[in-house]
Length: 147
Image (cartoon, rainbow, N blue to C red; front, top):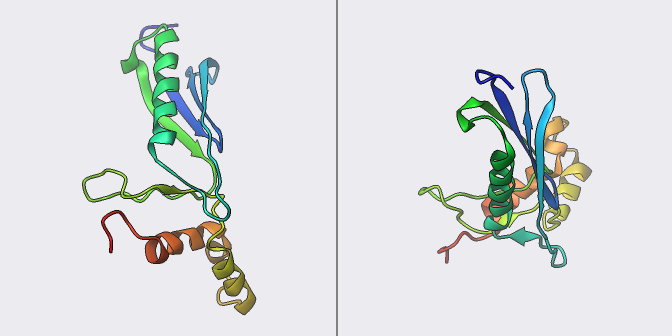
C-alpha cells in the first residue's frame, strides 16, 4: 500500500444488510464490513425510522476504517448502491421528516394497477413501482406535524 494511493469506499444498502467495502486503485478489495438490520413489514405498510438504516452504515464504515492501514484522506470517492425505490422524506432542516417508506410498501399497488390498466403512459419511468411510492409519499402519507 503506497501512501499516495487513492481508494474508493463502496456502500451497498441491501434490504437487510449494509456492506461497506474499500477498493484500491487497481480494483482489489482492501476491506469489507457488513452490518445487518431488521425491517419488519406490517401488512401493506413497510416504514422504518431512518436511523435504523443510518446507524449500521456508520458502524460498518467505522470498523472498515479501523482495519484500513492507510489514512482516511486517501479515500478519494464514495460510491453507493441501494435497494429498490425506498423514500426518505427530508425536512428543510435536513432531518428526516417522517419514517422512510420501503420499496416493500404496497399501499400504492392500486394506483400502479390503475395506471397500467388505462395505459396512460408508455414512458418506462411511469411503469416503475417507485413512481407510485413517490406519489404516495407526496399525497397520501402525512408528514410529521401535518394535520
